[in-house]
Length: 283
Image 1 (tube, rainbow, N blue to C red):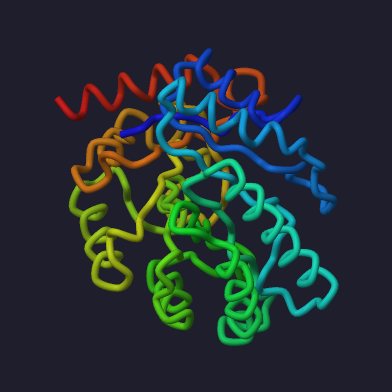
Image 2 (spheres, rainbow, N blue to C red; image 1 turned 120 degrees about the vertical axis):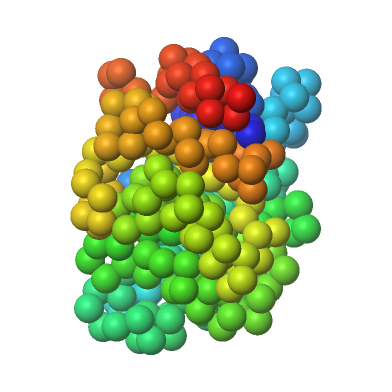
């Protein structure tokens, strides 16, 4: 398992690799622009080549780019929809430029209009973005916590999108341990986790599972509240090891999105704790 973290790319996107090495990360996730603004970052093209060179030298495994939080591909609002599609396209273009393995995105919320109405917006949006992808860089649907009409709270909903897009060869999945927990999948129970992975395999294919988000949960089981906790400090605690040690999840980029000790994101200690937890449960 390539245990890493979401890491700041301030000062140049290649600087994320420097920080990953300092933290002992084996994989990296970055924002390609401010996560709470529509305007894209004007990257220096030289930083893209530098990113690739540093990644190769450091032996970093998986690289993910996360789309901005503002994106909502299911919205009925035409202005927000247009901005969302443009932002995801921009992130995908940057991801391809740095050789990222995937662009992780939240499908969005239908805002009460219903799943079918939401999908009428989601499918054409993703058709446009998928045209930008390469065999190297996919887009990855992340399972949601399930609040507020969000789409992707279940494997079934993700599978519906996959089906509507004809099983596109560059459309994959990213599973978040916290989101699974709060949407009613007990990732601390081996049988429950296996049942979830069986469903994913049957409905989409485990070969489409390209990345993991490893987060403890600060909200109760089935609460549909997206609240991450630092490793070993939340509802999952030591039994997050069930998720980390599942044989079918090995070899994947496993990125931490925890707040860390000072709410600035995961640090070296968070990565150390996760690697030790993984080692305890796999041995």
